[in-house]
Amino acid sequence: MAFGGTFHGPYEVPNLVEGYPKSKAADEDAAHFIIRMVHKYPYEVTIYAGGPLTNLAQAVSIGPKVSELAQELVIMGGSIAPVVPKEWQTENRREFNFWWDPEAVHMVLSSPWHKITITTVDISVKTRLTRAMIREIAKSSSPSAQYIGKYADEEYLWDELAAAAWLDPTIITKESSLYMDIDISHTAGYGNVLVWVPGSQPRLGEQLVHIQEDLDKEKFYRMFIDLMSQPVAHE
Image 1 (cartoon, rainbow, N blue to C red):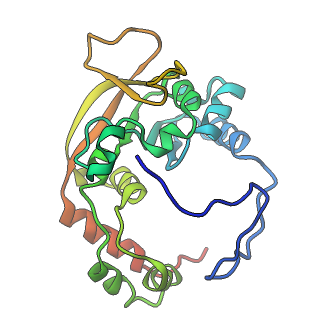
Image 2: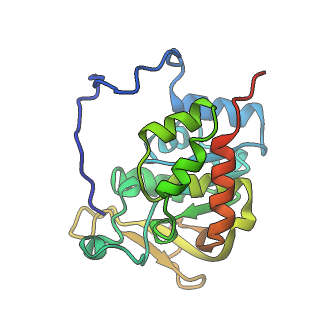
């Protein structure tokens, strides 16, 4: 999948038109936070991954029992056979989140999770944040709603669908179970997503994953609008 935009150095903070965050960065890195949480709450933590899997691969490498102690792993990433714009069609198995760090994907998908649920590009491109939805959300006075109203534009709801389907699985109307891995051969197929139907997998450590295929769009859109319009919860 193609990806464009302006890139900045790892230690460069660009000018943000919406202003800079006021909260302080955590002292603990992501990998050790994950390890600490699954040990503190064994079999209760669902890990949501909405980007490259580098941090999660580090956590699995440092703490081998992470996958066993987690309740579930929810991933937005990967691509099998999506209906996509023409310019993506020859790259349909090189999805951005997975292609960013294929070795991390291989490490994560080869770990013994109790359950892996994946929202691929295939289903994500069936969604769309429309201007009408943005206007409806902007009617709320909550900070998140006002932010969306001011800065959001029409776009696929990739990560949002993965999170919403975890909160309410009935949004998903069709799913399949396949074994999944990624090509790390450093040849022409490097970064391609690999899948097998049960019984045909090579049995090299790949795990069975639940792949979402279709959804109730109206139910998802209503849930998304309602969640983005809610006031901030105060403890």
